[in-house]
Amino acid sequence: MSGMRITEVTLRLLPARPAMCLALVPFDDRRAALAFVARLRDAARETWRTGDPRGLDVSAIEHMDARCLELLREDGIDQQQGVSIPAGSEIALLVTLELPAEMTAEQAFDEIGSARELAGPDGPLRRFCRLLDAAGVLDDVEVAVPGDLARASQLLAVREAVPAAVNMRVGRAKKTIDPRIEKTAADMIVPFDRLEELLTIYETGFGARGLDAAIWGHISDGNLHPNVIPRSFADVKAGKEAILDFGREAIRLGGAPLAEHGVGRNSVKQQLLELLYGKDGINAMRAVKDAIDPDWKLAPGVLFSRT
Image (cartoon, rainbow, N blue to C red; front, side, top):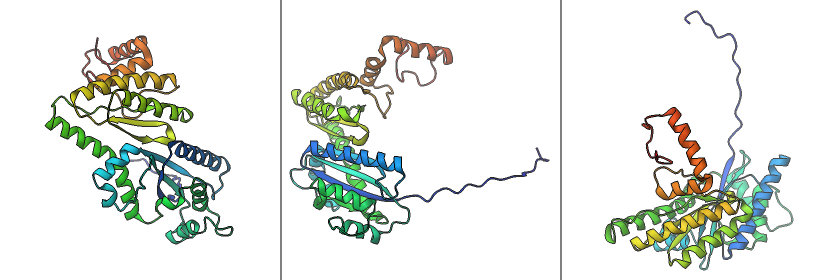
């Protein structure tokens, strides 16, 4: 080894990272919001197909439902972060746009300011604003332009405050109402064109059981996180029943009852895994586990039990 010499080196330059823009977009109608997400998905797909630098490169679209927005108001997060959420908003989207690396804040404001004018710089941000205007929500949008890290941090903090608000309420109920109370949530995914149906299933299922719940997630991917806000241990039990029903419906809609958060030792998620793959599928997994870990010493109880 000591006699080896490097005789050739290949260097490759990485492209400059895109400039990032965040937009918090409230809607008073959920179907209008879903239609807007569909237009963004189509525009992003066309941009990738053509490589048009003026096109829309949408890297993420998150969402928060009406109950999530109520939680933000209840906890004063909207005021704390300087964000205005119009009364009557049914849903809010957090859209992440990737803009040309050379885009400056001044250029961004020029495109935003000229969105309603016939003349002006034709760029991705202006096109985005025109879509917002066509949807009737341009005047209510909160934007963090490239380089405005403080505003971007505030908009991201609003989104992250939602699961924190639910977790705080779960913890408080566990401490003051019943120590058996625990987080009761799901992580399911369906094709985007079945998302409205899944949202209706969630709301109907929670409503029929009298449960308080908040729903947020990665709306552009069809991946949502319904969470129960428990007021009693009975709510936890009813929530688990609801999640199992939701899992069956997600499978029926061509999706999966388990998406990004894993299964672990959660008994409800383990039941969902069996709903997805069946007993034969789980037994096949056990056979693989027996072959590579005959003593079941590696992560015992994760995904499924030994018997």
